[in-house]
Amino acid sequence: MAAPIKARDLKSIEDEEKGDEDSDVDTIQKRGEWTKKIDFFLALCGSSIGLGNVWRFPYLCYKHGGGAFLVPYFLSLLLGGIPLLIIEIGLGQFTGQGPVTAWGMISPLFKGIGVAGLVIQALLDMYYAVVMAWGIFYLFWSFRRVLPYSTCDNHWNTPCCFATNAVTNINTTSGDDSTTYEMTTNTMLNTSDECGNETTSSTVEFWNRKVLQIHLSDGIDDVGPVNWQLLLCLILTWILIYFCVCKGVKTSGKVVYFTVPLPYVLLTILLIRAVTLPNAAEGVIFYLKPNVTKLRESQVWLDAGTQIFYSNSLGHGVLVALGSFNARNHNFVRIFFLFYFPRDTLLYAAIGCATSLFSGFVTFAVLGFMAGKQGKSVADVATSGPGLGFIAYPEAIAQMPLSTLWAILFFLTLLLIGIDSQVSDVI
Image 1 (cartoon, rainbow, N blue to C red):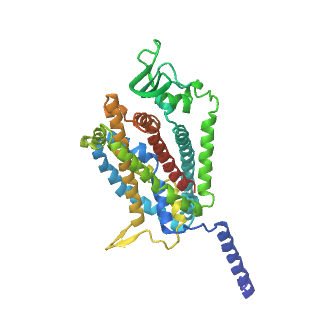
Image 2: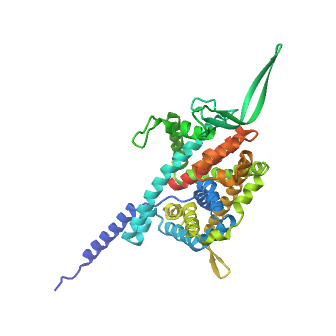
Image 3: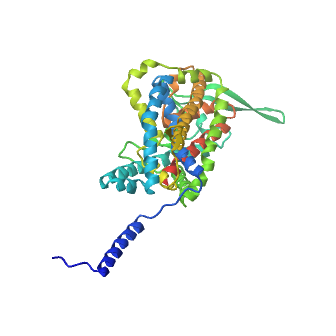
């Protein structure tokens, strides 16, 4: 027979169990909390307002049927986006841990979900930092009376360069008086016989030869020299990110008060300027004119779902991390009549979608102006990704009056939008 357990033995067992619990608590440390509820909401908005809102959604919208694309887009949001938002934020808030630990609490096998999201987010952070460095590079070069990507007389330009609406200074001297006039030409060509019809715009050459320096590399096996100016911009990018997240939610919760609202102010200023340009209406019509036949294509529905997942940071672990800084009793789901109403998450999703639509008006008003200037269709000048942000937009800005001002505002907007996403992702 087993020996009876004495009171001293029971006490020792209880002490051991209590010690095990204390060690588990020590292993999983308590995270900080948002100072105010608005900090959490602004951080959510910052994670959804990214560069994809500016240059990916507008392109997908016009490509997949204009206004008709909004049907699969909003269906994907309602059926997949909002439920997953509630699940990820709720998981982080309930566990009070980051994505790896939070998923591991449900099941040890689920820890792989958090690890996969962490790897994906690390790659996205590195990519975003490089894009922000490009924006800072353009921002520094925009503080000039004549934008460097609007002319062909720079050391990086080739004989096949052409500049649209280039500004040329003409000096005239009469006696002791010297006067400088500005003459704007529709197209300035600086070509030779060897170019033929293969010419390159000044904005493309600035992007390829000054920023990326593609011509200094023969292929993927030849890295080429380091672009020190761009490297310094990348270092500055990470320094800005560090100061935004160095003290966790204490600093990032205050940074979003500035970085989230200001891009909307700058986008509104750019929109007012864009809609007053010639041919802006044609660009906006091209952007939203519905083509319901596109809804028959499976790729339209796939891109709509992908955009919802990408713009709302679903599956990356970001929402789990942001929710983990909430108080355990924070009620981000309210009862509305007889139904549960996901107030915070619904507002967050609505703001992300509205930002995408709003950015599209700015983008296509500018593209409509540029298409009219070049005598082309909007479809011929519309593009997506960095080609829109660093080629099409600068080319349109170079043709506007007060181009320096609009260039500074645009690239400052890109920088702030990038910081919003990075702060929420890195934290």
